[in-house]
Image (cartoon, rainbow, N blue to C red; front, side):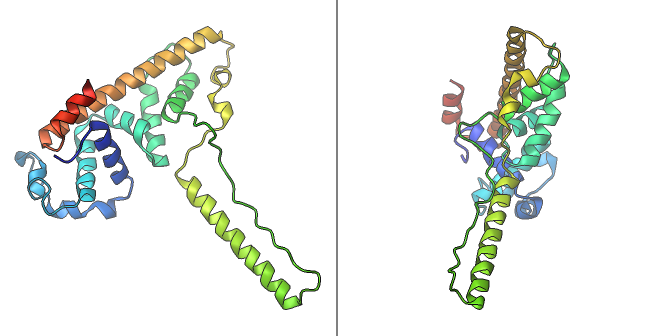
Length: 233
């Protein structure tokens, strides 16, 4: 048994899939891909012997992508993916599947806020400013060195901020205001009902996806049965 919970397996598989195909190809060299063998983990070396956990996660990512129906795969990416592109792809794929009397703009924004809930205190931060104190009596070469050092420090701060923001999605506060989701002046009670209905359908879709994942994990023999029962209860 490798995974202690269904949701944990999903998070691990999606995270592995986000690291790039080149890093996950080692398992493919060992995997016997013939479908008549079941595509089970045993074909990789027997209960993961000889493989590290990272390679099993890569294998599971590919397995889930292959076996899950598209709507389930998209729902899991929208809900659990940490990679910006994968999450946005999931949102875009799931939004048209949601049946609701709400306008399309409302549905899209509701799906987006469900997938990217507002985090208290979360703000997109720019690079920290770097200042330098130059003594009035400093020589020219010292002034140049101080300025160059400040410029170099500023560049480092910009790179840190860019790296942090690359895969981090923080929506503006205004995006969570339902007044911006509907341009027809619909009563707030109706908007709240629309939102609750959309969220309920999304959670139902994720529940169905997790149930499908659990079946796959059990078939592959990589889920602790006791933990799966505990999660379902």
